[in-house]
Amino acid sequence: MTIEQRVVVLTGVSERQVFAVLKLLGDGATIPFISRYRKEATGALNEVQIADIEKVNGTLNDLLKRKETVLGTIEEQGKLTDELRHRVEDCWNAMELEDIYLPYKPKRRTRAEIARQKGLESLALSVLLQQDNSLHQMAKRFVKGEVKSEEEALKGACDIIAEQVNEDEKSRNIVRSEFTRGAMITSVKVKGKESEADKYRDYFDFSEPLKRCSSHRLLAIRRGEAEGMLLVSVSPDDEKCVERLLRLYVR
Image (cartoon, rainbow, N blue to C red; front, side, top):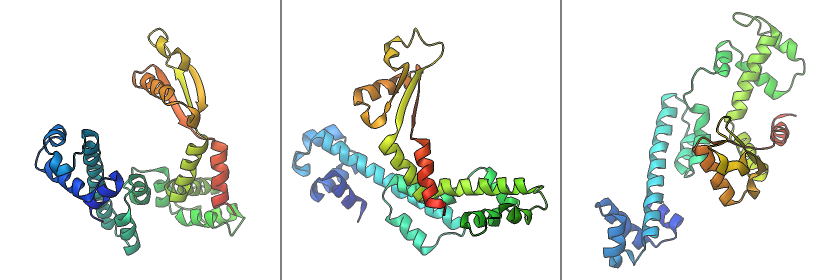
């Protein structure tokens, strides 16, 4: 589908109306002008509908540019396969696109990268495969050069595994689903702001399942955070996340 056809699907507005609105916007017309003076062209769409078309069109075009950047970066690394290219080109979800890109995204020098430079990637792979339970015997073969001990070898392998788990799409979706199902939102007052933050007193020591947090409470908490009165966190049940990740990786 073209961008315009995707706008039609996502907004539920007819193709003729979407094309007319996008042409008028492209010609420099404003949303109020289109709504008031171009009813015959748009089928009398209101400002909210026109703004929605503009927003969706902008989002899709931004995503298209991002995909071009992603493909270019991966291609420069010599890692762009036909399958990967098709996955990126067929993706129209920003979060999913970033998940696909994450393993190839240029990053600062991480502990995992340092471990790879020490030659520990094959040890990490062996640990992940879980075909040999004698970890220290495996690690002993990697004690050379910059790696001074079996413990250091295993620690480096763990750093590599941790990065691989973090960058894996299935792993990320497992954790996301735990956020959806059981995340808790908590807020506490910022020290020294008690008098200024009095209107947020109800949230000085607040905790509630995120899915039960009403919209007005959530908005109030976020306002308090934006004003520097509250410290806010949203976190899932760590133990459940780890339990589900273990089921994915440990055999």
